[in-house]
Amino acid sequence: MTDLIIPAGAGRKLVTPAQSVTFKATQEMGSSVSIFEVIVPPGFDVGAHVHQRSQEFFYVLEGELDLLCFEPAERTTDTWHHWESPKGDRVVRAAEGSCMFVPPGIPHAFRNATDKPVKMLFQSYPSPEHEAYFEEIAEIWSRGTAVDPAAVEAMRRRYDVGQITPLRFEPPSVVAMPGQETSER
Image (cartoon, rainbow, N blue to C red; front, side, top):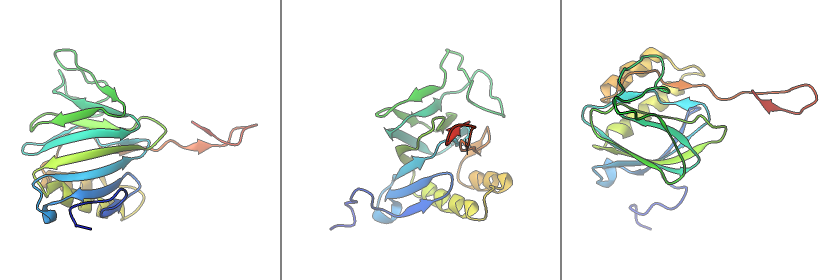
């Protein structure tokens, strides 16, 4: 088989508590676009951010993501979930088959606000910025269960990521309720 045909489930994987990333097309393969398959767990919020040089494309393969891609009337630094554009654009709950193109300079974000993992195809131009970004964020996650926000912020600046609201990973917890085996709270 050629190195340019990647079978289902194949590719170099980086797995952290906050996401699983499988590299599908890279600069090493001769691609000017980095392409990844990403599994986004429940409770993951990438935080609103902006790139000055990069372009991105997100395609929801399975599940639903909340997507944002516009300049809000007012940027808040705590959360992007209630942002609205001057034209009335709001965050979209995007189902399977939905996509989002992000040109340079546009604030954007995604989060999995559901109780199921989401699979998406993610493309970033130019290659290899996001390849190195994913490698470094996996290293940061591997240092322990809590992510150092200062380390993430410094790393993101190096990769053309202007963070507006924080990255968050707050997975739903499962607790035993009287008379029930388990339930999500």
